[in-house]
Amino acid sequence: MIEALWLLLPVAAASGWLTAKRSGSGSEGSDPEAPSDYYQGISFLLNDEEDKAIDVFLRVVEIDDDTAETHLALGSLFRQRGEVQRAIRLHKDICDRVDLRKKKRDEARLELARDYFAAGLHDWAERNFTQLIDENVFVGPCYEGLIAIHERGSEWQGAIDAAQQSQKLTGTNHGTTIAQYHCEIATKALAHGDVETALQELDAALGQDVCSVRAWVMRAEMARERGDHRAAVRDYEKVISLDDEIVPEVARPLMDSLSASGDEGALRAYIAKLRTKSNSYTMISTASGLLENLEDPRSARRFFKEQLLRRPSLQGLQHWARMEMDSSSASSRKQISVIVNMLDRVMENRPSHACRQCNFKGRLLYWQCPSCHNWDSIRPILGVEGE
Ligand SMILES: [Zn+2]
View 1 (cartoon, protein in one colour):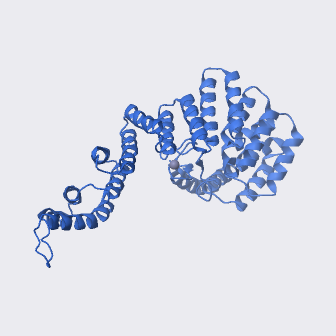
View 2 (tube, rainbow, N blue to C red):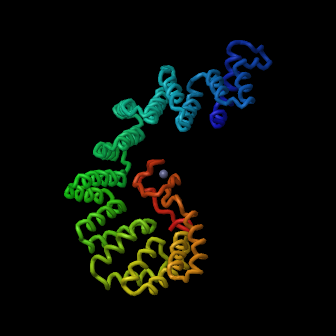
View 3 (cartoon, rainbow, N blue to C red):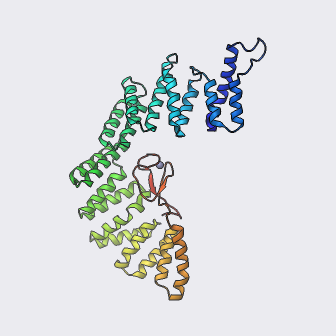
């Protein structure tokens, strides 16, 4: 809460001085006597009672056109810190001050709508955002608020409508997120077995954003589902061309489809291409599994070791130790099992995915980050501790 005090302390000092001056407590030519509230605030501050200090300083600082900015900044700070009720009180106070400039009161109305949203009062938030839009005030931020409300309620068509309206009125391009909403509707349709609607929605998603990784992944999964493995391979290759970091996520189904397509030449050519570069752990473990059938176990192990040396990872080391244990004599196996057990413990419950925006970590690829709510920001963790 120390940030709030940085905002308040100088304003409280100036305000306290002015209050004292106005009330005539200081004689001409000498400093006015500082009000007792201000000293009480300082006293709370010195005793590490920051919350009480803030309350006192807020009482000292009158809301006027000069201090409204500080109050608005404080309100946002309260909301960010989860003190939503405090933020609502503060923003309501500013909204009610008819003597303030309209712009400041409108800013407070926008912040109040955001407070309601943060408090989970979505109906109230929606009403406030809509009123501001109707008055042509803060149209862009208000549409952002409405879109977020639809997202939280999984009202995807509502989110599309709001995003398109925002695009029309503000010129902001929402194509990439509209594509995500179409993918959400497609996912829902698939859950009900409605393949036709799902395909239409994916086409609509690509119409909004031809580089939508998620839409191409879903197309590839649907092609696999109907047994069209050549189409699946094409779509997975498109996915990889769009974002190299997604490779560990699609490596297994891609290699499985390559194998299931029955085109052994294409599969061999793909593995030959892999040999020329460094690959993620999932890709090399899947490819070495296929090489066991395509060639023989020794060839598969050689491929795996070459690739592991090129791109070392804990997962790769764990896999390699298991392979060594399986092909070792009984005495060596006991020694290697110590390493395997140790690596198992190191790898246990280790997150495999992270958000590129907020660094949220988990074991699944969510298309919308559960923490920061950004779309398409989660990817497999790369490097020694990941892929
Ligand atoms: Zn995030």
